[in-house]
Image 1 (cartoon, rainbow, N blue to C red):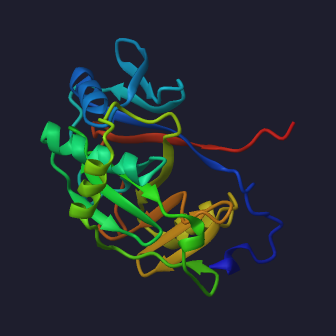
Image 2 (cartoon, rainbow, N blue to C red; image 1 turned 90 degrees about the horizontal axis):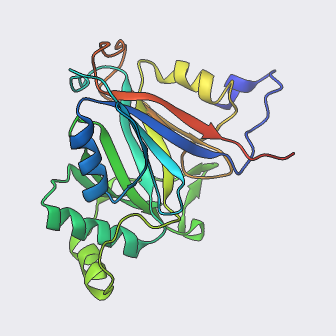
Length: 255
């Protein structure tokens, strides 16, 4: 994939590049705000009639909800959001989130050990995919031929729940250091997406296999995932679909 930048003077992105805000279209503001507060622990930082900014206790904006009356769940086999991922500071924080999902009886759609991270998956009331995860230390990551090795193995939920039981602190919402760790997109063509994110923007390829590509800055396992598992050659979702409006990429201010 490095050949995409051959002959082009496009440097890699600054190693401190990160994902900033994620902005979603939703259909019912009251329902969505209740979900993101009660199930995931976000705080409301600002709310207007059709827009809400959610964030962490340190007043850092992470998520923007935009209400569109009559919005419908995005058709599965269209391009757009696969999931956005909330990175929590520690395994204990992930365990407390799991305990809160159980206490609120909110269903998970998956739970995976990716070797570089441990992740829980769910969807919001409009079907927007969400991952909440914790990273393993980089010293525990494995590399082969310049690519980080990631897998999708079953997560030991019993062990994670035991972690929550060992930690006496209750779930009280997001920790201050919580941030958006990555965004995973369904695309129509992985190579075309790679030409943009890798060849033009300057993200580095961290892992690739048939139908999927993972890119990042600073040696992170991925800031952006791209796949065609259900969207090869697909078009955009309809105008009335819930889903991703946009996300931002944050570069450090070196001035």
